[in-house]
Image 1 (tube, rainbow over the protein chains, first blue to last red):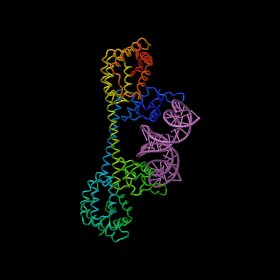
Image 2: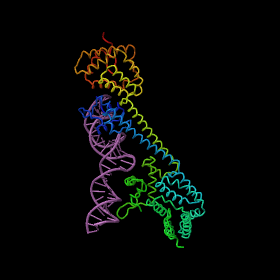
Image 3: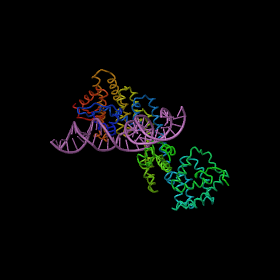
Image 4: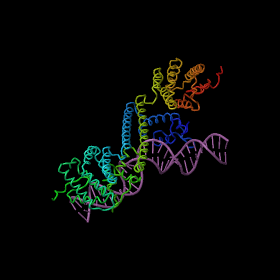
Length: 259
Length: 259
DNA sequence: CTTGACCTTGACGCTGCGTCAACCCCCCAT
DNA sequence: ATGGGGGGTTGACGCAGCGTCAAGGTCAAG
């Protein structure tokens, strides 16, 4: 007759595991001796080993009982099912591994390389770190909503940075946000440039992210994000509204310009 | 200002997950409105998305906080560590998958193919299912203790089955165990044959599983297993002892035979 | 008799939330 | 005014497979 620790040792498991199997009814409770100790027969060792074989093969404990009693075909079906689940799990982990490899490689922000290129171009143009950080957060939001579309959009966004007007706009915005003053004149100047660019884009039909349904509206969110980052952006939004444009991240025509 | 469900929707997670992140301090609790509702800023969406990016990459929640604050090199080290752990986990699962494939292929008992061959040979010789089952359980125990050695031993075990004496022994044992009578004469006959075989093996120096330390003693266990399967085996043990041999699974000389 | 090793039950901890429960709040239609 | 439906709130259990105390009772040996 064996004690629980002997049983456990023979089967290569811990005492706690054996007790756990008793609790869930996987291994029958043996007789107790006079002092209440569990006393096991040799057969229990075989039972326990068979349980561990299945457990080591990745079979959930809750299914092992049935499997040990099952006939060959039922057993085979169960094995196939388990194998499928293991396969799924492995696939999931490997996907995670790819993800984390990208994290290590990229800007540690999980942005597509096209986007980090764009951000680097902004820095090269002289845009302040604060504004770049704002852009970065915006693109994180965009990427979450349209993971694939974003990569398609980037080339034209990058190309647009060659436009002297746009460069000028970014620089002015950087200046404003880096200073602590509420220099309204610069804000007005920025608004004028933006309105001009918007007008230009509108005429040439460039404002057509049409497929991007508006009912999904993360653009309001982007604007809110900008305002949070610096309240002076609110003033900019107001100025744009005066000029007939709503929004910032995605400009929308309010009405034909009065002039 | 966003409600918790809006925040969750933007980040593509459940409301419960967001609350969980608050609980563990991963995402800061936002302000509450007059009625106690949580109200989120746009920045919270960005925070939440960044958390999910790391979580999806397999980073444990408990580490995400530190990683989001870490500098580039610390971050890289952490990523490497996570990647290693993911690799380990994948390796474990793949090992499980191999195991289960073997289970499906083999005798659904997790015995090496050599052993199942041996068991089949026993059946071919005319050994009863009951005795084969006993042998099987014994080999399950042996395989658990010496997973690799067992495969080495099988060829000679299989070869020994050609010995007419051994065949006869197995057949007699089968007969005895299949019958309900306590036919002592047959038991004595079996014991005589066993003793003869043991003597033979002893002289030719075959009894030398020497490397298999006896302090590991699963042989007592094997004997106990046999007795459990059929109490008449106890009588066989006694008969063997009279003939100067101890044990059954592993015969050991007690003393020189008196004649 | 003491000591140390082993046994007992009971209960919390870990991971990342899902899923009630019981109750409050807001807005809209009747 | 009232009711209903779809929000929100905290609190708590559940899952898988044990690890790890806690607080004892038991056994064999010196």
